[in-house]
Length: 175
Image 1 (cartoon, helix red, strand yellow):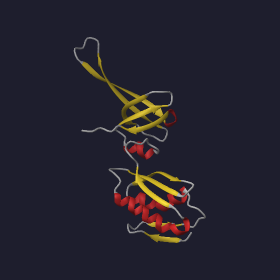
Image 2 (cartoon, helix red, strand yellow):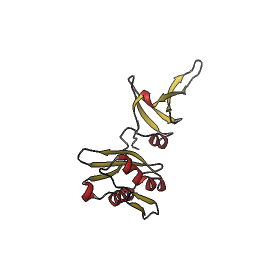
Image 3 (spheres, rainbow, N blue to C red):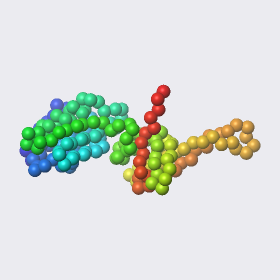
Image 4 (cartoon, rainbow, N blue to C red):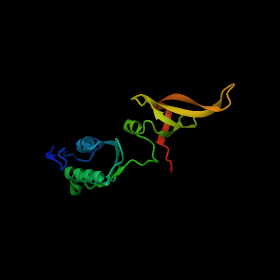
């Protein structure tokens, strides 16, 4: 370890020395900033050419450009670009992209999502009951009950484990 510094937000910054940059080293380096600012890590990709992409998400609201800039500065402080020879991109998770981590499921709890099931088919419904093991999707349809004049809404709750699905992503609605 090279040492410990404090960032502008007062978060401790761990400086590491390695022969190459790893996902784990990057994750440790930005962890305090993410926690302090209500953000979480979605993914870190490192190509063989040392092109690094860090994807983050906000627990509430959206990721600010300032957050991406701050993480870039934290990583650049911890890992010397001249020594490590890397390029860095920091971005937020796109709304059109499938969820990768449980934090994304928690963020969109109560929102409409589209689930692609491994056994085939797509389901659109309201995400709920998010746990470490899985989640539930509530679907609604209008049905005519026997003897009733009007159709009534009938909700069906279906549980899924993460292993049962190919993907889950938010449904984007334009108003």
